[in-house]
Image (cartoon, rainbow, N blue to C red; front, side, top):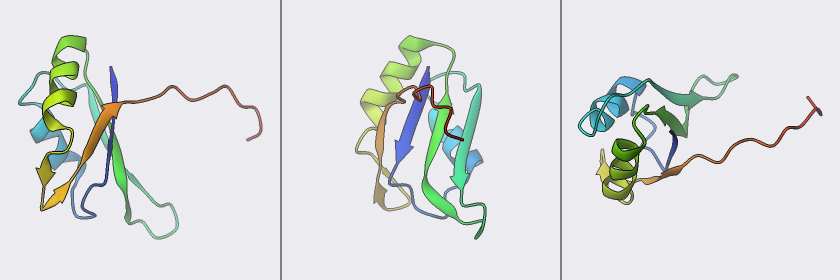
Amino acid sequence: MNIFVARLDYGVTSEDLREVFEEYGDVSSCNVIFDKMTRKSKGFAFVEMPDNAAAQKAIAELNEASINGRTIVVKEAESRPANNRR
């Protein structure tokens, strides 16, 4: 399952987030999204977990949790619409 994590503190790294989610199960990938121009965090990330039950538990328990003093939003990522405009 692909999980969307928002409202992250700009200092949170992919490894920091991986450690948090690994408490709930295996993490396939964890990517904090960075601005290409400034190379600063955009404050959101995607975490992929192969076990849907573990992912659902992580979402339920981490949504509105605090990481580095900020309350985060955690939910299942929505699939991107097929868009050929790029």
